[in-house]
Length: 123
Image 1: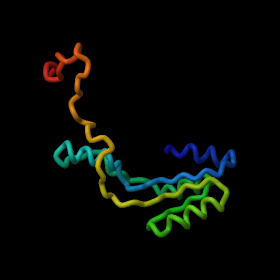
Image 2: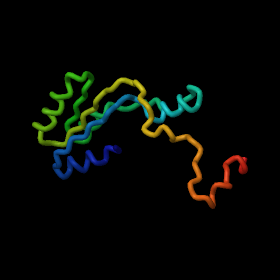
Image 3: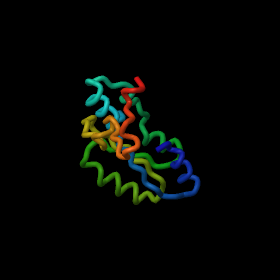
Image 4: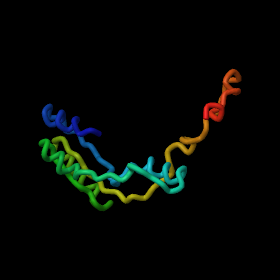
């Protein structure tokens, strides 16, 4: 999400609802770096603006959800408003498993003609 779509929705009067799942980090990348790089991570903690405030500055409705009990009310308010809405949903920084457990695994050569090649020979 670059937020440019919010300005387009405001200009064209499209009542789209965008939910930003905001945990203040690139969680999947951080988990990969922790798992594969001995708990060293870089560039994964984010200092985000309040996306609801940014949406309001663009002429849309901006809502912030800080607790799970507020989700339903925020969604109902977004639908009732009939205007573009950004819901800034604050999440914990709990890290789940990466989407691809094999993300950093060495490639497997499936075609016989490539099996003789190895990354080791180029080091």
